[in-house]
Length: 239
Image 1 (tube, rainbow, N blue to C red):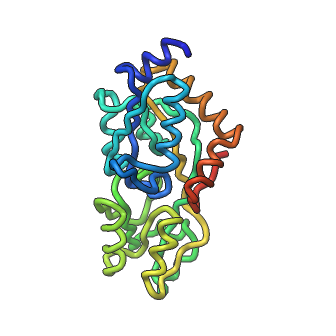
Image 2 (cartoon, rainbow, N blue to C red):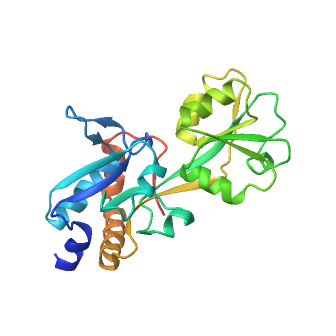
C-alpha cells in the first residue's frame, strides 16, 4: 500500500471512520460493546483491511454533525451522503449506494406528484441537515420548509397537522404511512440520496484511493453482498 495513502487516511495509525447513526439503512444494529453494525461500518472495515490498519468507528447522531467535524482531527473518512454543500469541504468518492427520497401527504391532499409539492401555501416538514433536506433547501422555490431535529420529530409534526407534506427516505416513509390512517406515500421521488465515502479535500491521494475502492466494490459485487448480508430493503447499489 502506498505510504502517502496511509499517511492521509490513517495519520494516527488507525482508520477513524465517521458513521451517521441516523441512517437506519446503513446502520442496522449495534455490537454488544455498542459499535455500529451495518453496510456503512462494513465498508469502513474493508477500507481499513486494505490499508492494513486497525479501524475505529466514530459515531455521530446526525449527518450534519459528522460533516461539521471534517478537518478537526476527529475522523479520517466519513460515510455520508454526497451533497454540493458538503462537497465544498469534503472530497467524495463516487456513491456506493443510493436511496429514494419522497413525501407523505394527507389523504385529502390534491397533490399527486413530488413536483406538485413545491407550491405556495404548502408546508414541508423535514429533518434538518439531512441529505434530502439539503436538496430541498437548494431546490424548493415556493413551498415553505419546516425543519425539525430528527426524522421522529418531523413525523410527529406532520401527524399533528403541523405540515402538509412529510419529506424523508422512502424505506422509512413506508413504515410511517402505515401509522397515518388515510395518508398517502407519493409514487415518485424528488431526489435520490447518494451515499458516499469522503475525506478532507486536501487528501488527494486518499481521495483517489477511495474512488478506486468504491468503483471496485460496486463492480465486484461487494456492495451488493453487504446489502444482502444485512437484509436491507430500499437500498440499491449506486449506478
